[in-house]
Length: 313
Ligand code: TA6
Image: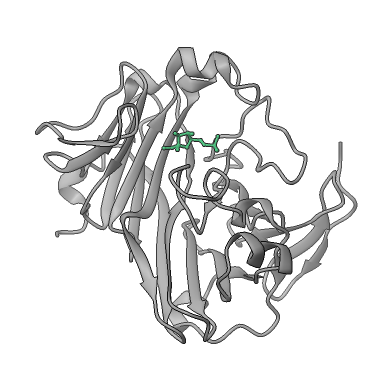
């Protein structure tokens, strides 16, 4: 179903329109035709396309587009809690809340805006939120699309002079892959990880790239700031660069769990892989007035590019 005509800001190739729930969504476009879409519901990136219009993020064919539930796919924001090991709902409330467009954000480095289409969103706790998480914060999110098509998300979370608080965080990133059995991750070899399929026991990864033959649900710890996800069939490599996010979540539900999820097709585990920049093992602690920044940049390069070419550590 088409959306009402979007209102394009020609200066910055930004358009705001309403989605089928009447919620504002922001389309970013670059001169080469690449695009990204961000919903004010959850501050969730719901689409990221290259200059050939190919969708690079996974969205379930059975996704439920009905607030407050987050759509299954794109990049939901997990804050102030990752997982369900706290008092809040799974992955916290930020992805289920209505954000606003931040018309006057505190400035970022010029590199974070120069030559980019970007939008700044803002989440502040409602009275209801303060009942379940009594901390006064401001969460500013910048989503930007660069001239080369790279997608960057910058989260700035500030303690607004309340009492000290801690939080865990993840950019829950659903990558679109051709066939999970043809995918490998480079950059996590030999690292320790917590296995969510057990009781979050700690294991050490082997020395080879990670490949997939069954359900994987892990938090890799103390990871490098550059990870490669190689899709052999499409000859495509996702390069994930991050800062302020020491951990990486790797999740594929595989067949049995996919069949148990109403908002995921039974076979769709084959076309998705979550690789999330995260801060989980050591929650981020903020004193009054302090601010944390967590940044992730997603790029796609031809698969002739391999991990040796990644940024030297
Ligand atoms: O590790 C990722 C994970 O916590 C999995 O256990 C799975 O629950 C996934 O997130 C999806 O969570 P969601 O709440 O979006 O269904």
